[in-house]
Structure formats: structure tokens, C-alpha cells
View (cartoon, one colour):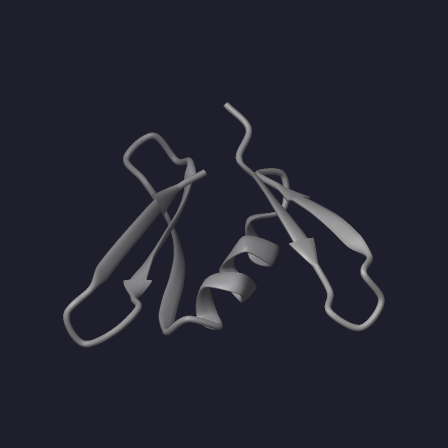
Length: 62
């Protein structure tokens, strides 16, 4: 399954597609909202975990 995020920049109105083939790019976005770490799940697939705030824990499987 492919996960894609569409980003729009406010100054140039350009769009850039980010997908599951580049988990580091998704990690960089997650770090903009709080702490985030790139790990692997039990099957060896990339997984991002972290916190958005003191009370909100997140996990994203890619």
C-alpha cells in the first residue's frame, strides 16, 4: 500500500509528491510537529513513532 502526502509551498504554489518509498521525507514532516523516530516493525517495514504533544502519541506504518 502506498502512502502519499501532497505538499504545497506558500511562496511558489508548487507541489511535491512524497510517498512510502522515501520514509525519511515523511520523518522530516513528522519532526515538524514534535518528536519522531524512524524504526522498523516486526516484519521489517519502516515505521515512524513519536509525539505531537505531551499527551498525543503517534505511530505511522509505511
